[in-house]
Image 1 (tube, rainbow, N blue to C red):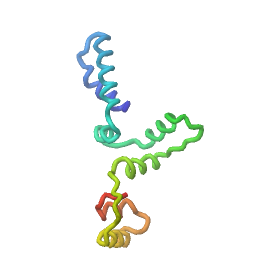
Image 2 (image 1 turned 90 degrees about the horizontal axis):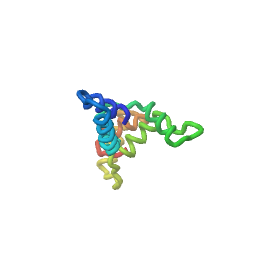
Image 3 (image 1 turned 180 degrees about the horizontal axis):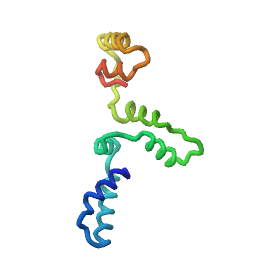
Image 4 (image 1 turned 120 degrees about the horizontal axis):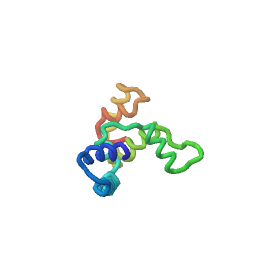
Length: 122
């Protein structure tokens, strides 16, 4: 959020005169950026610095030991937040596509298998 906030402030503060106008812009931007969801933030930023996300998650929770790694943050986002979960039982056709994708991609590339099957499952 900080990056997006800074970018918007820099762009929209050009030509503002006086502290009162800047404070008003700050309040407006806080409301705008605070209302954005995670998917909106990622779409606007274009890429994600998962190291920064993990640092902020660990700091936000005030944990004595880092609980969130960059890879766990990324995996959680991809598998639980960004996708709509498909929870209905697999059809026989889908099972066959999974078997074929595993044979093509290997047993360790489950992201590639899920992408090849294309049913939205994680």
